[in-house]
Image: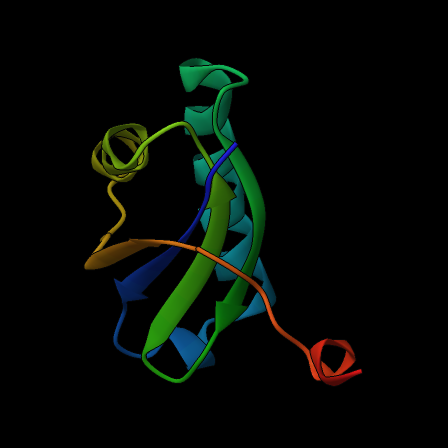
Length: 90
């Protein structure tokens, strides 16, 4: 299944406390459960003003639907074509 990285612009994201992050996570999981098993949240990275999320999904449209239903921004959605790391150099 394709993987996507979603850029979510959220001013002050890096200042969100544990309870706020937990609330966002619960809302996301609730919408994911509603949409069914074809979309999965892998992980997210919180920076100062953005959250970058990795999802597995059949297409961008279901990721957009997740964002709309959850009230989350999805400013940019890109399909991950490949992954490299230091191991790639070996």
